[in-house]
Structures are given as structure tokens and as C-alpha cells.
Length: 374
Image (cartoon, rainbow, N blue to C red; front, side, top):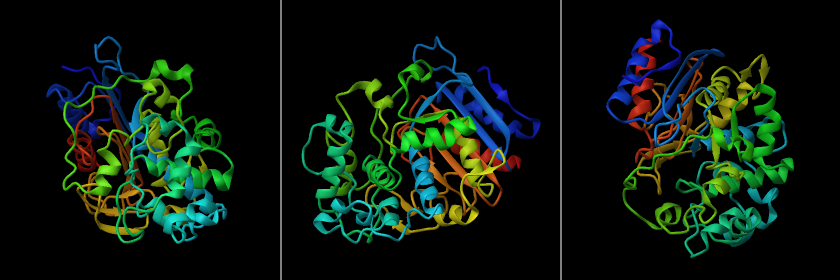
């Protein structure tokens, strides 16, 4: 029997049972699941191990890599610029990043880039994987290349390039990289244990990953899918785990606790309120989550509904029954979501990765049990 720690009120007994079952059936190494309702943390469970040798317990201070769940943080940071009147979702990316207008991209808007419609899911031509660690070089390549499909006609998930697109738009307007801005404006003031680009002094808190032994099912493979996932240079390489962990890449390098993610998404589910302060206006929460495009994604094998950087729940429903729920999932199973109808935010993190691209059965089981308990 796994020993479960944390906050587990009686009304969430079925969630605790589902959490235990994930371990007892051998699906977990270490994991944490947190719910925030109307601004209050109502459930926070953790168990298991932070290393593959099972010598170090996963505890309330353990950070886990969240991969693409980081994109929800990037979407929030862009939304805060819009809320402040410094950016508009409808304006062309090239209005703040002039070089981006090259090769037929002058009309691509901020919201199209944020909703994976820019046609830049990856680089089709060979490059060194280590080049990903050169921010200016990658942004230069994105500015220069032509889209892989006509922008605005379809979504095609941008697994890595999204971070450079959102991050460079943000930097051109704000002057800071996203990781630094998040730390200064949100993480430090509100005590959020969430980082984009982790300082080396915190590396000892990071959980060790147990990778899956198979590739995900990408469905029908096309040029957009191959550029996104299936070339030797599709993701950063050559620098090792430490370099990636410390790199400020807002599409993939987030490190967090489930509590920090749930508090952040709980604020978006609760009119933007976090510890008595507004981090995003209710109008901008609705606008950021509003559907920009729906249909068969060109990269992911799903019928997707995209907001301005947020996955919307209503087509695939990975996060409970709510059609207004939005959030993001990450490679291997992590996820964070906000349900404004129920003022509920939640997050799941783990270090044993699955091959599911979206809707991992482990958090799905927990979320379904949580909604049944409300």
C-alpha cells in the first residue's frame, strides 16, 4: 500500500482512492494532485518517489518537469500584456517583431500565433539540436522561414516553437524574458513554486523522470507533424538535462509543484483573484480562453479547440465535464486546468511519463472522481 500525504478531506475520499489505485496498479512512480476551489486549496495529495531508484520520497517541496503545461503560464503572461493595454490579440506579430513579416507572415496575428495557426510547428530543414539553446538564432530562423501551411486555415500544434513565438512577442513588448517576468511579477510575490528556467541552486529538488518505452501515437504523419516531433532536431539536444532545466523556454522547461499550478489556474477560475489581488481581469480571462479555431489539428491526432494559448476542454474533455474549462497538458501526463463555471482550478504532476499526448488516464481518473465529489 502506498503512503499518501497531504490534505484529503472526507468529501474527496474517492479521489484519494483513485490516487492510491494509480500507484497500486503500477502506473506511478511519484505524483501530486491539487485542487483549488474559490481560491481555497481543498485537496492536495502526494505520494511515491522522486527518483527511479526509489530512495528519495516525493514530498511537498519536490519540483517536477511539466513540459508543455508551461504553455499555460506563457498564455497568461501574454494575456496580462493585453490586459495592460500593451498588446492586442488582433494585431500582427510583425507590428512588434518586424523581421517576422518575411516569407509571407506579415498578416499573422498574435492570437493566431498563440493558437498554433502560424504554420511554424517546427523546422523542416536539418539543423543542430543544440541550436535551440540560442534564443536569437531560433527567433531569427522563425522570422525568416515560410509557414508549412497557410496561416489561419488550421491549427497545428507548435510543441517547441510556441515558446519562442510567445516569448519573443513578450520580450519585444515588455523587455524581459518570460521566465524572469513570471518570477518577478507572480512567482515571488505570491509564493508560487513554479519556474521557467530553474536556478542551479534548486536542481536538487527536481524529480527524476522515468521515460516511456514507446513513442506516442501521432496519428497520420504529415510535414507539420514531422517538423514538430519526428526529426532528430525537433527538440533541444546536446546540452544535457541540466542545460534544459535552466533554460528559459516557455513552451517546455517549466518546473513546478502541483500546488503552485493549481493556485495559478484557480485564480483564472475565480475572476483572476489570487491571495486578494487580481492577476488578470475577468474580461481578459474570458478573452484569453475564447475559441480561436476548432477542428482536426494538423500535428496532434485530435479535434482541438484552441484559445489564445490555452487548450479548451469542450472537444476532447480531458479535464472533467465543463465546456468552459481551459488549461494545458504536458508531455508524459502533467496538466493544469481552470473551470470558471465551478471556480475550480486543478493540477497533476508526476515523474513516470506515459505515451498519452492528451487526456492521460491517471489525471483523468482523479479529475472525474473530483467532479463526482463536488
